[in-house]
Structures are given as C-alpha cells and as structure tokens.
Length: 321
Image (cartoon, rainbow, N blue to C red; front, top):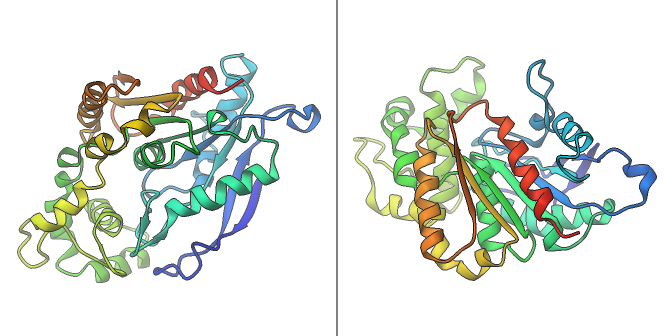
C-alpha cells in the first residue's frame, strides 16, 4: 500500500527536498478480514535508498513483501505490518538523524511517521511490538533508534550497519578527494546532471553525504579533509566519531538494556569492514552488560537482502504477544 504523508518537520528543509513523501506499507495476508492488531517492523534502506526500493521486482530475489508473504505462509514469522519510509536527500541519504545541513529526519521518523502509521493501521501500539531493522545506513539508523528512542522501538536489528568509523569511512577519503577536486558543490551539480558516473563517484557522494549528516556547519558541510591538500581534518573527524554507535553505546546503556531484542550481523567479507565494526560494537556491548545477539555470515556488503529473513525471524520471536 502506498500512502502520501505531508511532513511538518521536513518543511523548509535546507536542501529543498520534498516534504510530501511516499510511505509504503506492507499489510499481511488476512489483514482486512481479521480485525486483529499487528506488530510493526520499520525497514530502513541503505545509503541512496528509498522505501520503495524494498519493493523492487527482481526475478531472482524476492522483494520485502514477497519475502514476508513467504515467511508468514511457512509459519517462520507471525503476521506483521512492515513500514518502508523514504528518508532520501539531495546528498543521497540522511543517516536517519537530524542535521542542519539536511533536515530533521530523526524527528520525521519518531515524531511523525510512527504516529501516522498507528493512526491509520491496526497496530499493536507499544514499544514491545514495534521493531526497527535495516542494512548498511539502514542498520546504522536502526541502531540510532535503539540508542536514542528505545521508548518507541523496543526491538532493533542491524545488518552491516555503520559502526567503528575508523574502518568504514576513511577508505573512501582519498578517492573522494581526487573526485571532488576541491569543490563539493560543483561535484554534486555534475553528479545530478549526468546518468553516467565515474568509478569513484560513489565514494565522493558517500563522503559528502556522511559529512552533511555528521559535520554540518549550519546549512553548509565541513568535509573531513582539506579540500586543497587532502590532509585529514582532525577537528572535523572528531565530530564524525561522536556519531559512532561503537562510542555512543556507553552513553545509552540503560536504553540498550531495555530493548527486547538487539541483533547485529555482518558479512565476514564486507567491503567497508563493517564486520569488524560489528565485532567491536558487540564486544563493547558485552563489556557494558547489554544483552544482544551478534552473528556473522560468509558474504560481502552487497546483495544480502536474504539476511532480512533472520532479522524478521528474531523480531517475530521477540515481539510482545
């Protein structure tokens, strides 16, 4: 089901991105006839993704709706409502957090979308029946919701979510520096103007996009390296690290301990080293006494939507009955 939602918190966002957005909602088989209330799982896409992409048609890989139909029919998961929000921006994404350079996307999710869904669908309106899951940047956003909004989302699953920033982001900095050529604004205009991108364009876009989220300067963006020489800027990088789940965990121990489910997984060949980040985060959670599940699988970062099955299975087992 596709709904249109008019956001108040995204009105007048600094990038002029749309504040009226599609919201895709999956309703389980029998929803219309049953009259029952259902748990909800919010599904966040990775960087450059939008909720609609979770419903893309693919001959070899089921989309999220097909995946859930199959899992429900097999009795692997209980019937649940799935919500697929759109938090895309001009820079490629929002990391699902508030930023003066992009807009209030954390508020958008927590203050608007949750209440909108609960008002329009028969949900089990409590934190113990409301889950958040996602991959890559979507996994990061899910972790942020668990860290800062455990009063809303009682279950969190992160697949290959951004963590331990030292290993996942700097690998792109040299490529981004060379591609941007000293002018991020010019790069962005050329990026949007052309359908054909250079081999390092994604590294540049990703770095600018993350800077817009982690190191905004008003409506401008502070890059993590000097635009003239490429030298790393320690002051800006320090601001990035303040958003790292591996560092945020110790500041939100009570919230994390209150979760009914905290699940973290990553592929052992992740191209952005997010398997190492997951290991580091898991060790810190263990040291802090935070119950969680940490798993690894033999794969990389891409084409791993099959891992949603595991998240959905754990969510189904853990939601309030």
